[in-house]
Image (cartoon, rainbow, N blue to C red; front, side, top):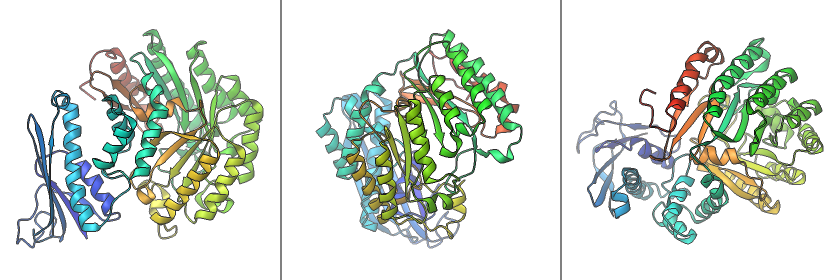
Length: 516
């Protein structure tokens, strides 16, 4: 059966669509320009198909938001309805941005009312459906609310379950000093290496397998260095301070030693002795690491790396297309400690095909024995561009209940390891409608992860598929400046990618560009 959405006042269709998907996972959810009248069995403009219809309308005056929602069947008969009113305080009336947030909240409350009544479901994250639920918490804290007051708002107005609400407040407090450290002259840099040794079953990132790239990798490094040299030099001339630098992928250490050395050397020349708070290289696959590469990273000032097993069960590693072994994860980790790295992240994924609670226990026990400084617990997301999406008949998904039990295993081990949450985000199509959480030892939180997810700092991004995010404090908003995803197209259009950035840099302390 299809579910159709119509927002009669216009706007917020995406927010209603996202919330509706939570209640009807796997169902087609479509946005309509109109809905059938009562007694019209044709389905209106729903391509002649019968289904459920969610109709939403709202008004916003100078003092009040009024929202209504109706859940109708294919004949137009109202099954459930809801109406909400919210008075606007003086601060909200003065801010268009705050008004928009209030309209969105009240409108989603109405939709939640009718869908929870119809389905009997009460999603853990309530009406919070976006990638960055922590933004809501920071806005509330900025308005002067205490932790307990924030918890009350999350639970009573956003319908967030108590444990998720407490996770949000704790995470926000642990990252607040870093977010507040951002200034107009402070930025972070991201450098993208779109190559891997293999393509994981669940991966949807724009990356290519090294074996089929021939001489493209060397050429890509040439173009990437050119982009860095032309853009970063101008930023530094303007007095910009680089807070953190993150080289990600793909798998940056899939580069051959001379290629990696060339990239790190170019970065070193650009920095010209400037100290930055954090310099991360995402090593990812342990089979791409050896003593020489780790020593090279250390010599060039890298002070944070990521060695990502995803699971410590060998049969799962084989199933998802990773060529490394569990033994390689452990040996490379110990090697990195020997070289002197005192901030190492590891990633695990909840809900990998074929795994359950015993697999998660084995993974977390093995990782706890290594004692990483950061641990990112991801929940499997079924992305359209992944091989997993195309082969769900072969790799059935972990049930929502099982995913939650696996996540509970992770949380128990995280507490044993003395780690605290420092960043959190969510994605579409996540198993169990859960979340991704980064945990850290005290004092070891990844600055880049916090700033990138917090969207209160400009991030300049380089390479194919990299997306710069320019922050405008006066409007509390970002504007994305994307590079094209295809490697060859990126190299063909490099001048255009650089020119896009330059137009923003030239007006960096002015207003938002209009033509992108």
